[in-house]
Length: 114
Image 1 (cartoon, helix red, strand yellow):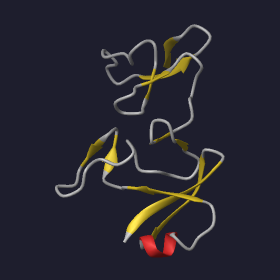
Image 2 (cartoon, rainbow, N blue to C red):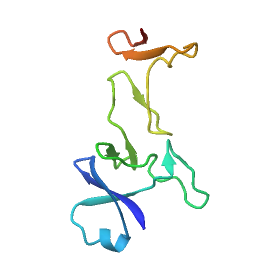
Image 3 (cartoon, rainbow, N blue to C red):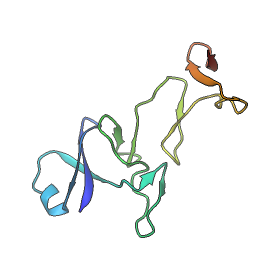
């Protein structure tokens, strides 16, 4: 049994566990996904990384990249082609000392949350 994502207009609308033979009888576009894959890396000792990330409802399926990823959170963020994670133009503060930060798209910077 494998995991499959139903993709409609490039968006994942369902994820099920089924045999390929069952998927072949269903209407629509179904794309195999692996719960062992995150950021283009697999935790499985026997299976390769599959489509960059495990599919979840609401995620994007990009058929050109053959990858699943979340929708772009901010216009200034870019997609890392290796992981299919969105990256901010400024890294999250490394000297956070227990502080939390939130992204400010207007200033393209991280703001401390009080």
